[in-house]
Amino acid sequence: LFLLGITGDKVLAPEVYKTIKQETLKTIRGTVQADILKEDQAQNTCIFSTEFALRLMGDVQEYFILNDVRNFYSVSISGYHIAEAGANPITQLAFTLSNGFTYVEYYLSRGMDIDKFGPNLSFFFSNGLDPEYAVIGRVARRIWAKAMKEKYGADSRAQMLKYHIQTSGRSLHAQEIDFNDIRTTLQALYAIYDNCNSLHTNAYDEAITTPTEESVRRAMAIQLIINKELGLTKNENPLQGSFIIEELTDLVEEAVLLEFDRITERGGVLGAMETMYQRSKIQEESMHYETLKHTGEYPIIGVNTFLSSSGSPTILPAEVIRATDEEKQQQINTLQALQIRNKSIVQKQLKELQEAAIRNENIFEKLMEVTKVCSLGQITHALFEVGGQYRRNM
Image (cartoon, rainbow, N blue to C red):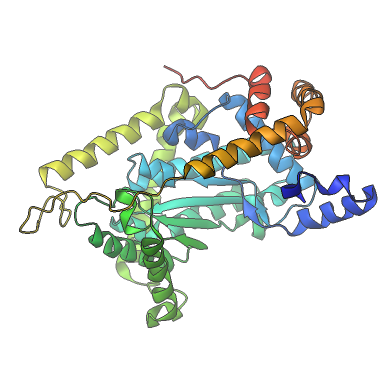
C-alpha cells in the first residue's frame, strides 16, 4: 500500500486498522540502532542535542511498553563503533556496559518498569583478534546479570544479555586482502564459541570498497561452514572449563570494573562525556595501535611482516559499487512526489509534532503518524527547532 502512496488507515475501517496495528506491533521483530551515547563517544553521527536524543530514546521504549512491543529491541547498545574508532577490547566492553546502565537509570527515572524494558535492550560488540575477544560475551553477561539482579531487582528475562557480534572491520587491510577472510573466520569462531545471539561476518574487500556479491557470499560461507560443517560447534560450550578461558574471563571482568571506577570518578557516563573522557581514551588507544602497527611491534601478516615478493602493495578495487544516475533520480522523484502529494497537510503534522515535544508528550507515538506523510528531512528540521542541534563540548 505504501508503494502506492497510501497507508492502511486510508483504506480500512478504523477498528480493523487498529486491530491489525496492535497485533503487528506485538509480533514484529527488529532492532533500533539509536544509541546516542556511543554516537557522541565514537561514531560522530549525532544530529540532535544529547539531552533531546536521550528523550527520544526514552519515548521509543515507553511506546514499546505501552503497545506491548516485546520482540523488537528499542536500542542496540553498541560497542562495535567504539572499537572501530580505536578502543581496545576492555575499553569497548566497559564503555558499552556503562552506557547500558546509563539507559537503565534514565528509563527508571521516567517511571518505567525494569522487567518491561529490560528485555527490549540489546548489545552489539566487535570481535577482533586479541585474546580478550574470546570472552567478551561471557564477561558482559556476567556483569549485566549480576547488576540487573542484585542492584535493580530485575526478573530472569531482564537479566539475560542479548548481543550481536560483527567481526572487526578495523582488522581488515588493503594489502593482500584475501588474508582478510582468514581473520574474519577466526573472529567468527570467537563469537560462536562464546555463544553470541547473532553474527555478521565482514566481506574481505570491505577494506577497500563496497562489498561485491562474490565477497559477500564468501563472508556468508564462513558462518555456514562453521555452523554446518565444523563438528566442535555441535557442542554448546566447546571452551567451557578451559583454564585460559576461565582465567581470561576473570581478568577481563576485573579490568572492566576498574574502568567503571574511572568513569564513576568523573561523574558517571554523562559527566565523563562533558570532559570528552571517552573520546580521548578511544583516540589514545587508536594511536597506540597505529604506532605498534607502523613499528612492526604488532605483527600483521602481509601488512608489516611476511610481505610477498612484490612487497604486498595496497590492492585497488576492481569494481566499485555505486548507485546509477537512474537510481538516484528515482529516489529524488519519490521524495518530490511525497512532498507534493502531502503538501496541504505537512505543516499541520509537523506543528503537531513540535507541540508534542514541547508539551512533553511521547514524540515517537506522534512520529508513527507523521512519517506517513513527511520526509525524514522535514521531520528532522522541525525537531531541530524544539530539540536543538548537536554541538560537541570543547
